[in-house]
Image (cartoon, rainbow, N blue to C red; front, side, top):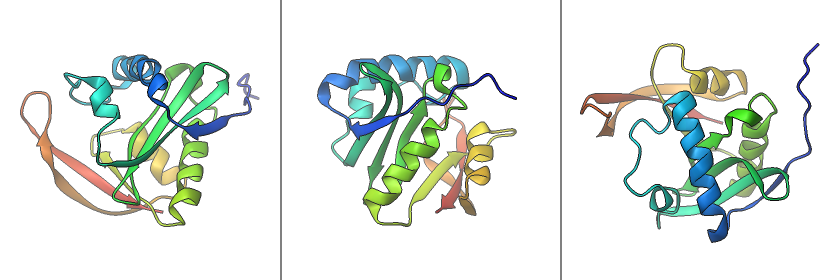
Length: 153
């Protein structure tokens, strides 16, 4: 039996005043998982790009952001991350379920194709269907080509 406690989550639209805390959570994720592969020169702008249709945060208590997700192009999931302290508490699943309702169904998700990828394992374990792999239009931190696994749900 696990000692993890699943806390009730509130998922709400991200507000501009959330961005500083989102950047701090993203920094923790970067240190734990290497996401994003390249740290953006302006992480606030990276999270708040004009082409994003909508962004949400998950909170287990007021003032504490446990996760973040955004959508672009109407159904493409992007900027999905969960604070290391909130892992295994179904935060990512709750965010994705919320996005699915918002989008009215079918979603697209791209995950970096690397060995033993927790993101790919999560995607496949939670009902996402792998469709194909492509080369990203952007490069990795050392200029290397990056392969992306494409999923639909």
